Length: 315
Ligand code: PMP
Image 1 (cartoon, rainbow, N blue to C red):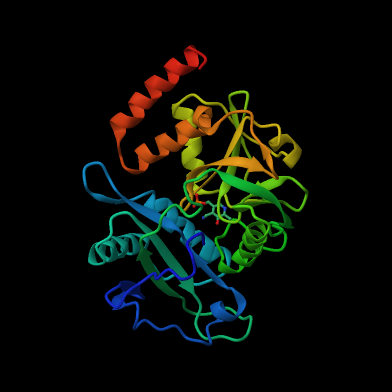
Image 2: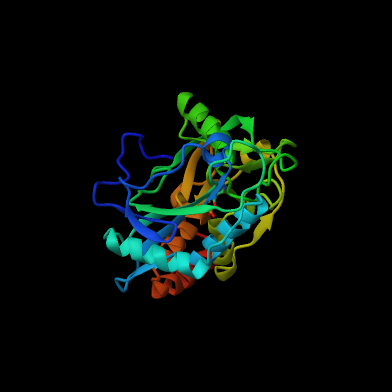
C-alpha cells in the first residue's frame, strides 16, 4: 500500500470483527497452517467510509463491495457461510467502536489449516478498519509502464479480488518506485493497457474518456462510479482496448480506486499531457466523486450546471 510500512494500523484498543465476535486486534490470532498464508489463497475487499455532509458515517457502496467479496470467494471455491447484511452491520459497529468515520475497511476471507490443495469445509472472516489517506497521495502522479504484465485471465480468476494476485501488484509498484516513479501501469498479456497495481485507469482525448473494458482487469467499483458520474455530466465514455502509444497522446489521465479515489497523472514514461490537470475533465470527476461519497447532493447539481456552462463557453 502507499502508506509507509512503519505506520501502525492498530493500537492496544483497536477492535476487529473476527468470525462473529468483536476482539482486540492485539489478541486476534490466525492459524499459521492456514492455506491462505502459504498459497495466497484468500479474498478481500477494500472499502471506504466517509463522514457525510450531514455528519453521519456512511460506507460507500457497501452492498457492491460485500457482494464482490462473496463472488470472489465463490470464484475461488471457498465456502462462504456469511450474510452480507450481517457483515455490513458488523462493519458499522467496529467503525463506531473504533471511533472512525473517514476510514478504510478491509474484510478478508481466509482458509483454515490445510497444507494440501484440496477444498475446505469452512472459511474465516476478519474485518479491520483504520484511518488511511488517499493511497497514491494527492500530488499528480509520475507513472511508468511496468515490465510486469497483469495476471493472465486464463491462469487466474482475475475478476476475483484474491490475495495471491497482489504479488504481481507489489512487484510492479516496487519496480516503479525503485526507478523514481510514483506508480506502475501494467499491460495485459496482449500488450494492451490494463490497470495499475491497485487502481483502474481512464484517459481523456478530445472530450471523450476512455478506459479498458472488463476481461483483463479488476472492473472496479470506483470505475463504475466514474462512469455513472460521466453519464450524469454528459461526458462520453468508451470502454475499449488501447496501447501505451495512444495514452501518450492523451489530453489527461487518472487512476481511480477505492483507496486511491480519483488521482490525476503528471506523466506516463516521462511524457506529460496536453492539458493541465485543473483544466482536465478528470478534475471535474474528482470533485464530483468527493461530492458523491460525502453525499453533498447540492454540490453535484451545482457542479453539473457549472460544467455545462463551461462546455458551452468552451473553456
Ligand atoms: N484494480 C485493482 C488491481 C485493484 O486492486 C483495485 C482496488 N480494489 C482496483 C482496480 C479498483 O477497484 P475499486 O474501485 O473497486 O476499489
